[in-house]
Image 1 (cartoon, one colour):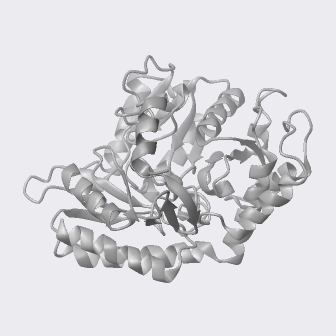
Image 2 (cartoon, one colour):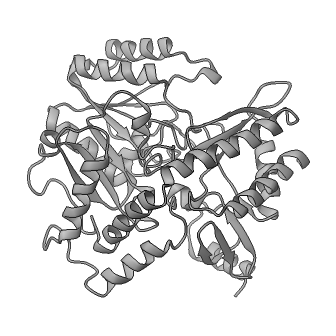
Image 3 (cartoon, helix red, strand yellow):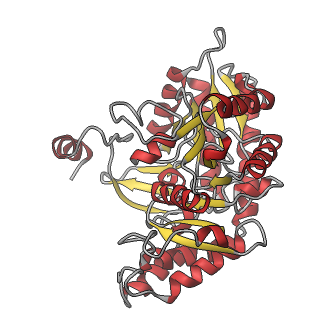
Amino acid sequence: MNNQTLQQRKDAATPRGVGVMCNFYADRAENAELWDVEGRRYIDFGAGIAVLNTGHRHPKVVAAIRSQLDRFTHTAYQVVPYASYVELAERINSITPGTHAKKTAFFSTGAEAVENAVKIARAATGRPGVIAFGGGFHGRTLLGMALTGKVAPYKVGFGPFPSDIYHAPLPNALHGVTVEAALKALQQLFKADIDATRVAAIIIEPVQGEGGFYMVPPEFMRALRAVCDQNGILLIADEVQTGFARTGKLFAMEHFDVLPDLMTLAKSLAGGMPLSAVCGRAELMDAAQPGGLGGTYAGNPLAVAAAHAVLDAIAEERLVERAQGLGEKLKARLNRIRKEVPQITDVRGPGAMVAVEFSHPTTGEPDVEFLRKVQSHALAHGLLLLSCGTYGNVIRFLFPLTIADATFDEALDILEGALRQV
């Protein structure tokens, strides 16, 4: 078996709409490293798109899945429940921001969590409207696409989209959008497009993921909370990509002095197993009628077992603190290189949710070509990097927080070599 043969079989058997970045095929992986079917080694700075904060095949996660596998793999929680689901809900309720009474429901994907958060918000408020932000990403389902603030490749050819979804600009100092301008645009939305009394929820990523790793200014988050409180609107924090120690806090909303009403969680919750959640104020979570929430695979017992192990690993290995240290080390290296690489416009991000943005040195336009060359050079030397951003000119770093120091240093050397040589 080799990569070229598999690539030909892939092209013949699977649709082009499932875009694939790499032209090699995984054979095995361990922590922050993976090997393809031809034996080549790569350092994984993508981690399955932020799914593997605890790394590939964390021993605790593997052991938990094996133990559960020997007991049962599926009952459908809504048919025959199991204690581990209830226990995980209790853990999530206790570790998410705020001391108020909370409840948690589990699903399979981030998009499912987002859709169910919207359902809960509409049931709780009796209102239809939802406001999201430009550059935001909330999934690939029809409602997820409607909420997502990026057209290509997510929305092209897939409309029409669900109604009563609106978008407002997110403050972005690098691109000239001030907090004041963003708040003014939100008020204009209430005047021109939907009355505030018809809005069920405002959904926001505390740090935009696909949009470019832009962190919401604290004053804007406070202002949103005030707008929501004044108008009976619920604030949904989409922590699908930011959660579980990535930002140097267990959850990104801990960087702010306001609390959301609902949170969506997924990705690194279960160490590679498909599991997501909605956690929120107890009275809101109880708004839906029995049977209104759920799913055949929602809260799968193998995934739930993995999630318990992930939470144990984060606490025992102090991954919140490690995220902060690794992120500072990466940013220091990038800022040092920045002095000699004029294409680097910005280095940013809380904790280990770090990004570097590239622009053309003379025109100031997004430099996608430079990014592609850096990404290609790094991959050729064994480092897997992911891009993001509205213009596709941002590299995002999503390495496992469990990465060995020597492996991390090796990766930074490859990255620096790519930036300098390109």
